[in-house]
Length: 312
Picture 1 (cartoon, rainbow, N blue to C red):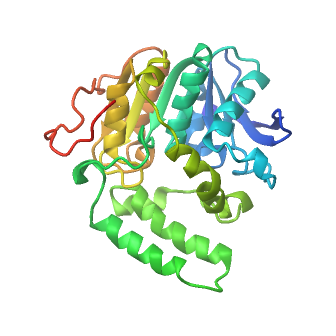
Picture 2 (cartoon, rainbow, N blue to C red):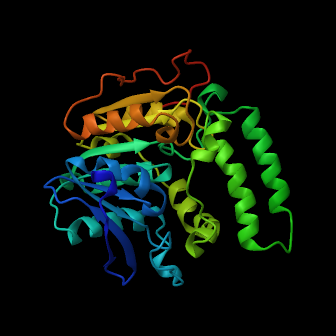
């Protein structure tokens, strides 16, 4: 079965000498590129039935090279966009589908803006919003008691000194898992843990110094959204506390050819809680059709537009 095919593993060396760890499965004319192999490979390899899947870890992430030269990190998310294209070229595909989760949902969309001629279709799952810092109404932002409770406990952990970094990471990850799911019972289904991978253990330093500032500096407008020529499927859990559901709705409004699949019971990892709905929709979309359950978003707040941020 496809799900048990052994991946081919390799490194792709990009123009500045950084090596990106890659896993690819399948040998088909159509290709799907998925960043963050460390987290997504085991779950998303099932999509290899009719396409070549190419997973890779971003620079300074996962099993890719640790990067100590700040000049190779300073562009943050823009480095990731260009690295994605380097992976595409390495494997010899003129056009590809791309899929990104969380802030990588933003990354693959920036890729579709910059390299539109090389993109067939885009899948965003729980994407970061189009504009960092946008304040959405509470019911579109996952602002519930679970969020406040977990953030309070995490603040206590961050305040501790002298703890073993890996042990601290495991305690923080145990809390974060609760944020990522709508039903607390589903937290145990998150089978990955970042704490034994040095790049992931140190990710927050890299995130705060380079990736987050590059996202905050983005100023996307109508001409940028118009450059996305490919159809975009945005999948978002309505209870997402990490990347607000309002951001998913906003993407589906702003992009020229986008539809939204809402997973009402899920939070930040909807494929964990509703795998058949999510993977079925992705397969249908990548095969060239819109899933039946998607909507064309015309109103940011389906419960009323009061408090909705202005669009541009």
